[in-house]
Length: 424
Image 1: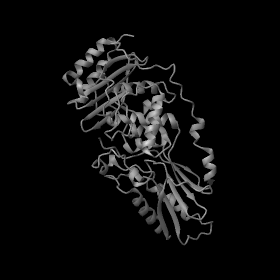
Image 2 (image 1 turned 60 degrees about the horizontal axis):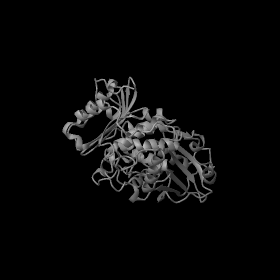
Image 3 (image 1 turned 120 degrees about the vertical axis):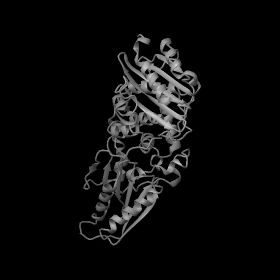
Image 4 (image 1 turned 135 degrees about the horizontal axis):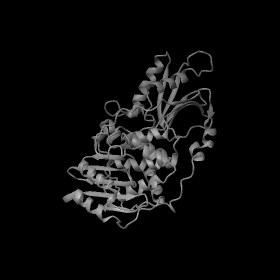
């Protein structure tokens, strides 16, 4: 798994501190995007991935490309009409590594829309204490934290006097939910395996993973407020405890919009962001429940679900299982989606951008393949959309044990570019 680059998203959009809304009113309003986003078209009538091979010439080139390693590969190639141009072990479930992010980002984009932003909120409770809540903004950092602290300190009714004791609650998920159960213990110490929490300064990573994010947050908040001469008591409560109906929203920091979050997950393969998008898309931070809801949505899209197993949003869990036919069908489905352009734009580009920036440079593939990579020990996967003179080609290639996977995938992609092999 490649180490992600430091998170550098757009500046947060601020809600003016004077905009004070009771929690009960906000709950009644519901998510804006659910009311404003256009309904996704039904799967009926859309191109579906066919089951019969239709391009023997490309099939022969595919078999030649993998040579004697056919048993460790699953490769599927389809066109925009759903024709199955070539296929090798396409229905065999494989460990997908970060190709899993193609699933979680498609789901979140469909459920939340292109304008969705993650929020971090400061609430004032009826007893004069405060509560900080969040949705996992990957770009939350010290400047935002300092603004929350300043607003809490300055909300004493305009008297200009600091409160004798300021009480602040941090609402967070339980420790047993910070990491998906299947993540290897060794991975959890690295930045790419940082814990998944709602209030995550710099995505819970510095040079390595922050192992106790709430403790770090408590210490920083106390230090920030004490520097202003205030006495503060910071406590930890469950994020699953409901807000009182009379809680008042004091301030909100919003993340960058959805297209930036998608790009962070797909172009840079940022595990933390992909995990948050799965949870927010499902409307649940219970990972098991979120995975079930995503699986149900996938089935509703008419995708080939045999052998598919979703257990996390990033692909770091080796219990995930996808097939290359499933991924090719998902790419085909998302190209017909109202937000298909946003989905495609979130991917890395061969020889140009993201995790594909150093691959296929100076070849005909450069700038023509938009895809998602996946790498963990023994696994290499690349799936995406290849631009050809005869329209898009949807390609998914997953290897669980290949010796030179990048070279093999590059050869398969170049053969797919030769549209003379598969006439319309």
